[in-house]
Amino acid sequence: MTVPFNDFAGKTIVLTGAASGFGLEMARIAADRGMNIVMADVNQAALDAAAEEIRGRGAQVLGYRLDVSKAAEVEALARATVDRFGAPHIVFNNAGVAFGGLIWEHSQKDWEWVLGVNLMGVAHGVRVFTPIMLAASKADPAWRGHIINTASMAGLLNAPNMGVYNVSKHAVVALSETLYQDLRLVSEQVSCSVLCPYFVPTGIHESHRNRPEEMREVKKPTQSQMIAQFMSAKAVTSGKVTAAEVAQKVFDAVAADQFYIYSHPKALVMVQTRLEDVMQGRNPTDPFKDKPELGQQLREALKTAG
Picture 1 (cartoon, rainbow, N blue to C red):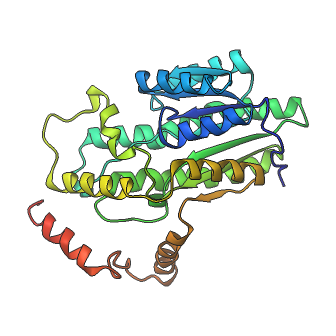
Picture 2: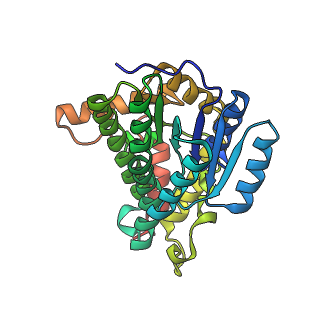
């Protein structure tokens, strides 16, 4: 069994997606706890502003412009981190984007963009930082490390009209569960967690603003994609649990060596239904069974989607 964290002061944390949402809230808590902070984000202007705020809290900050989908850039981030602060004690693979629509309407660029950020961004972080953390733990029996990967409740469920996003987040859950088991084979000093938030106001519904030009489609969004964007924006912005509250849950989970982190534990009843479908071999339960009017509205709206 791993030994959990008991002191964050003086430790180093790496945060991707650090300019907003969970990443920024994690940086604020880390600064208040006396940590060194590596803040990485694809949006340079937002990153600069966020890093300046965190420096204003008295923290040592390394700001780093990063596209997590690019392996070489994540590798360069790791070198910069080690050069500045040494091996990081906490790595939060948090950067993510959202995109929905009927699954057969996703273009190749849609798949490459979402999987590149949501899945390969986490995979690169795990591949690059885990060996550094394991090496640090072998050199010092008192050294502790923890990796957190941001998935989603969409990694435990399969809501309709959210195809590529669901696929990416299920993969992150699988990656994280495997990472947990693999670490248990080789270390009692490095552990990991997976964050599965539900609808929290983080700004992820606006992630298209950071979509690279080479990943953008010339054609206009389909009907299903526009519906997905509208529904996502409405659900995210109306969320009652804040990003700050979720960030605190993450720190608490690291301290307790807790693997699964949920923003909305009540949503697990839907996960239980899905698992019962699997165990009993029954067809997937209608996600709108308790609110049939919403299902009917979506079906009506999609009639022109083809």
